Amino acid sequence: MKYLFALFILLPYFHPLAQNNNGEKITFSDSSIVIRYLKEADSLWRSNSYKHAHSTIDSALRFSISNDVSIAMRIHLLKSNILLSEGIYDECLAHCNNAIDLIYKTHPIDSNCLAEIHMNFGMCYQEISKYDLALKHHNESLGIFEDLFGQNSIQFAKELVNIANVLTELEKFDEALEKQLLSLQIKKILLSEESNEVAINLNNIAMIYFYKSDFNKAIEFGRTALEIRLKNLGQENELTGTSYNNLGISYAALGQLIPHLLPS
Image (cartoon, rainbow, N blue to C red; front, top):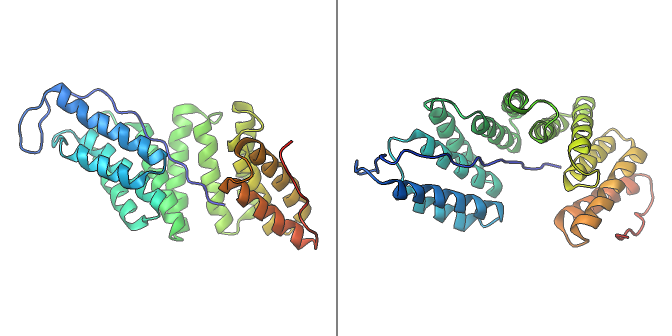
């Protein structure tokens, strides 16, 4: 029911006369090594190669620039992304704290990065059941995304899902449902109605209806989510399995067996 979501911002151009940790001036080609390592680490993280992503960041640190807080902030932000994916929440929060301290020392502040830091804070706090803090940071992130991109944006829609998931944990089902439906509406406009992103909302909405004991509605939304995932991801995918499981418990609540579904 929880979906992690994270955006890593591409690194900007850095000054060619920065210094390394020994106080020595380094050339632009040396600075570009740091950028290359961080981009490689980001790619490894996105492909779930967390161990290699950590080692690649460590390689970047050998060329790290002591007086460039922008690079240091992005290192901590990427480390928090990886640790969040690994479920190492205390360390993730530590890197989030470092990143947010550093971002306020940059001029101008990168609002995209600031929103992502708040998002990572929110997801970590949700995982350790500190829901008030989770909502605080997710709402900060949502506000930044709204200022940057408006409400009709995928960034805004995805952060609505994160907020709705916390509200679901707090059993505030009506508020959670409202945000899931708004996010779903935005995604259907911006993306295909059969996209994997739409399936996330449909699955979450189904579970909210299940918690509200509206099992027929849970089956309606859950079945649509499953059909999309069968078509896009195949029967063996983990997310497809989640949809099968969620749909199964809704049918079971009505004393029925889940029908056999295969992609057409």
